[in-house]
Image 1 (tube, rainbow, N blue to C red):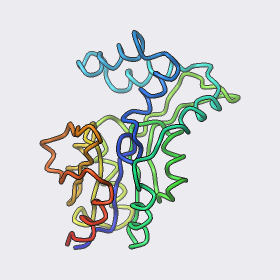
Image 2 (tube, one colour):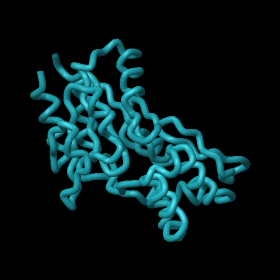
Image 3 (cartoon, one colour):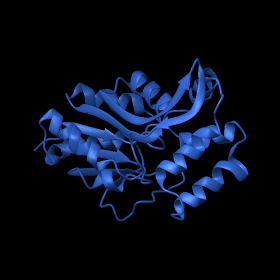
Image 4 (cartoon, rainbow, N blue to C red):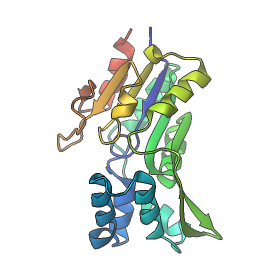
Length: 214
């Protein structure tokens, strides 16, 4: 059965920055002894994902949305990403982003690459300023539920789906598709080695794998 839909992670997969959250904190000099502490608490299981995101978002309260968008707009894409997505769409394949990253980045990526559908986490604002709140639409390593919902809405089966991610938080996504593809970054890192994903070092190889799958 041919692949009819490809789900993409965003941070570290379509873009070169592994985390739009960390990127923004670092650009605003809020990472060291601030957001990095929250990340450690989350990784150690001392706070849950919602609390982790809540604390992160509070650090940006009062920041102009325009400032955030300007910084986010500087995040570079992976090599040949526009060509890869264009070739998939040209073959009639539906494309979806599922990211636990920030919607300000994901919405830009969706528009630039003409992605069909996208899910991400939204920083809330009032009168052009971030108000310290966030709407969680994609929880860490819980992308599988969204994949099942999208497949159901499209009338497609697991056997018709592929997913591409860089590993961190993508294992649940990989488990819900027939063709999981792990993107290995320039440093040779892929932190989801037990996922059963086929590893690639170039996004161009995604098109080849999808075309060859049956």
